[in-house]
Length: 188
Ligand SMILES: [Zn+2]
Image (cartoon, rainbow, N blue to C red; front, side):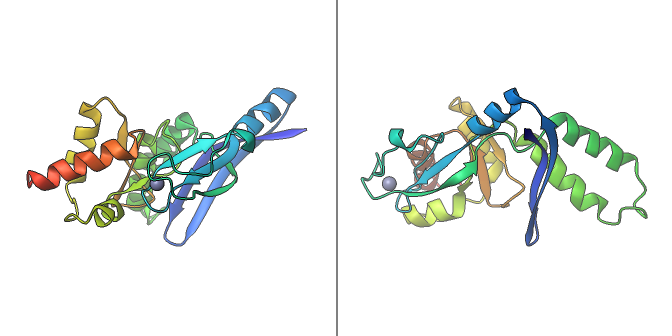
């Protein structure tokens, strides 16, 4: 039986590309199963949660605003990149001639951002959409937002998928309070 290991996954322009390695073995198949599951998402307040393949443990009501949750799956909810492989791609690309790979700069930017997207929950927070949801002015200083999230003890990084979005393990309610605080203090 075969199982897969994602090496590099990215979204660029209008396509998504996934590079995988295919191996044989039982352990990997079990791992593939534990990397599959569902994402539950509240359209109204942007709360989200990832669960495994057993839908019995799922609640279909948002714990924050009690709205009915949307969900997608089964999906791949495990790691999407092998970071040693991505680093190797970066090394090879840096050593290559621009004439051989004309879009070298663009690819390097994507790969370097992917390196920072290590070990985050699936999905991302669209800061503009959340500000719209809160009816506050759009927060533009992404680096300051990332820094503030980290100072609260959470992980945060930009994502190559969407320039105005971030990846983080911060709960949505904490993120909203932070953005409201920034708005009230006129920081961003
Ligand atoms: Zn909700």
